[in-house]
Image (cartoon, rainbow over all chains, first blue to last red; front, side, top):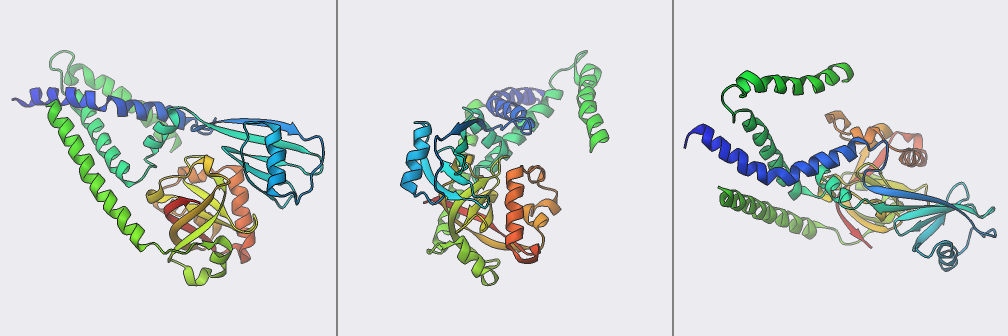
Length: 183
Length: 164
């Protein structure tokens, strides 16, 4: 088997193999790029509420559970404490709430995982332990191989030497300009 | 060719999988049993520096960009310890806020709050840490205020986490 044929076979098969991970990196990459515009992992819902009475700061767990779960039946109470500013901070399932005990005004914040995106962001960040770090390194190496081998697949007029290198250079120039200007 | 690739892939996963489980087992066998509170951790800070500790506390904050660190609260919101998830834990989840966690980790000290928050900064890491949200900043200030002269800041390099 000559080198070019072997390259084609490897490029084809490893190309199929790496499709899923390429999509993981690309799609989650878009979300992570916008991490300062929105939370890439969770949808956050913030709601203001008003309790029709003031509460004592030293209200016990059971009392607070009743108060907070009355606001919305979806709220599940975990625990609470009074912070330095005298506000009651309540931890709930998938969020937290703050109540001003004097005015009865409060804010509740719920978090909801973005389906699929939450998981692929974790894979992208390699924040699920040591094993995945090494597996994703291998995936990245395969991706590098597929990219480099792709350069040398075609011969002739549309091959790398006569045509492809223009596109390759163009792809290098764009990030290079940003790197030179902003780094 | 395809069969070979699948075979190599599976073989690699099994190989790394075995290695990883051995590491986890050895970590468990070395783990001290009794968990102390965040308050007790600070009381014995000088003796525990650079040692493996087991601490339990309530999670008051998880960093929003990837959950690379969280804060455990002791008896009040003035008693906080930062826990770095590191490679072993991976990351914390926002859903863990308000949960009681037991952390096994190495108790570390650094000289300034800026260094403490971003221990990998000197090695060029930590874009995420530089873009911290206001709530975490507030937590850092409280931590700094709770420690005399704000020159010595403690944190935990997490090794293992358990929900209580």
